[in-house]
Every structure is written in C-alpha cells, then in structure tokens.
Amino acid sequence: MCADSTRPIDPQPADFVGESIGQIAKKLFHATRPKFFPASVLPVLAGTAWGAVAAGGFDPTLFALALLATVCVHAGANVINDVGDDAGGTDRQNTDRIYPYTGGSRFIQTGIMDSAGMAKLGISLLTLAAIAGLILLLIKGPMVLAFGLAGVALAVIYSVGPVRLASIGLGEIAVALAFGVLPVVGAAWLQSDTLTGTTILFSVPISAWVAAILLINEVPDVGADNATGKRTLPVLLGTGGTAWLYLALQLTALVAVTTLSVTDRLPILAPMIPAGLMFLASKAFSAIRHSSTNRDAMTAAIESTLAIHTAGSVWLIACILFVLTWSG
Image (cartoon, rainbow, N blue to C red; front, side, top):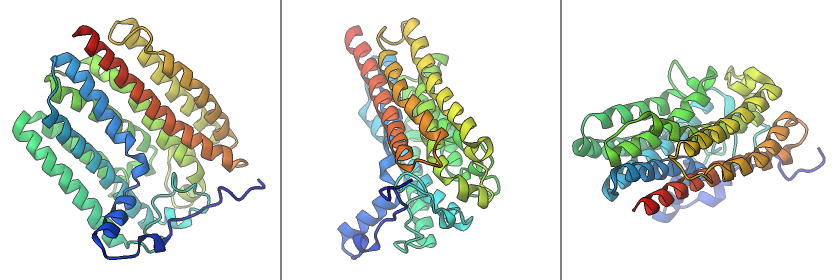
C-alpha cells in the first residue's frame, strides 16, 4: 500500500493536559471510546419504542434509567477492556490498529491515564449503572436484577478474569447479547411488562449488526491478538471465514426484519432499508477478504459497518413509531 493516511495514530497527550473540570471531563469521556455509544443508545431506544407500542403508552422515567444504566455498562466495559488488553499485552503490540476504531482508546499506552486510573473509571461507571439498576429494581421488581446482572457479567468477563470471552472466540456472542438482546428486550419489558418471542426476534437485527461491528473491528488486530493468545473469531477463522461470517450476520438481520414484516409486526416496507444496506455490507465483505493489502478500504468498511448499525437501528425505530402512530 502506498498511502500513509491510515497509518497507526494515537490520541495526543497534549490534548488532555490540564486540571480544570472541563479538561478532566474531556479526558474521562474520551477514555470510554464514545464513538461506539450508538451501539448502546440505539438498542434502548428501539426496545423502548417496541414496548411502548405493546403497552399503549410511554414511561420516560423508566426509559431514562434504562438508558443511563446501559450506556454506563457500555462505557465501563470499554474502559475495563482497555485495562485487560493492556495487561495481556495485546494493545501494546498492536501496530496494525486503525485508531480510533480498533486497538482500544490508547490512553494507557500514551500515558494519558495509567492502568489503575482506568480501572477506577471502569468500576465507577459500572457502579453508576448499578445505582440506576437498583432504582429500576425498586420500581419494577426482581426481573430487573436478572437483566442487570447479565449485562454487568458480560461486560466484565468479556475481557478480564479467568474466562475472558473475547479470548476464546465468544466475544462476538457476548456483544450480541449485551448490546442487542438484553437492552432491546429489557427496555421493551420495562415499558410493557411483557416478554415474548416476537420481542426477542425484534432484537435479532440489532444484535447481528452490533456483532458485525466487533467482528470487523477485530480484523486489523489479528496479528497482535494472535501473538498474545487472544483467540478472537478472526484469529480462528482467518480473513476468508471472517468475511463470510460477517456477511451471514448482515443477512441474518435482513431475514429477521423480513420475518417481522410478513407477520405484520412491522410495516410491509420495513425490509427496504436493511436490504439496501446489504450493498455496504458487500463492500465490507470484500474489504475484509483483502484487509492485509488495503488499510484504506478496511477503514471505510469499519465506518460503513458502524453506519449500517446506526441506519438500520434508526430505521427500525422509525418503523415502530409509525406503527404506534398508525395504531393510535
């Protein structure tokens, strides 16, 4: 490759110098990798919309608490993942990263924050999520505890502890559950007090889209992950197998939306946008297969995958709001 436009870069420590409240807040915020927050915000929005349709009404307090808890779990998981990957040596050896999408926040490696400070931040965020969850528990009862414990457990064992799901080829499943099924179904249940198979099916497209984000983000990190014993699916499957799995995830999302449409749970035009997004998915499929020779295409593919998740999720929310308005 002839261009250096996507050579590994890092956050600049000079951008985070200062002890003012604003500078400290800026540092802590960027340490959480906020570019990926749509992956936790949009599922809660989608699940809340679905639950509001089922309930025939909307509870803003339950929505706000669910959103706070989910985003804090996401942010805390990102920070703890950075701590775990630094301890395992993965991020320090990752010279093929595409910042800010892969290779972590780089805050530890560049000295912006130390590992202990990052760990404290991660624990603080999970504590804040637990407080929001406790309030929900008092309002809605013990079912909240099941959703909350599952989310926090997945956030923690994804990257730390004796299991480390991300290191044994189970990280993608964990992310699909933690940022798809759990927030969508949980938010829907909070609004409607119902838990159905159709609600779980509604969570499948978002689960598949978010799993595809993790999968493609892991591709540039294969060398460092393999060298440090982190057996992600791209390490285990290679670029060819990873590309086909990526395409299968995108097709799964389309099939799920189509099924909901033909069974009259979503408008008849609901599959239109997911079908159109398959064009971006096909380009990303090609980029994954040639990831070792074209970093620019790989960067574009990662950005397209983020766009697929965002556009697809927003479209599903719009479809649900249409159903809510039409039924009203």
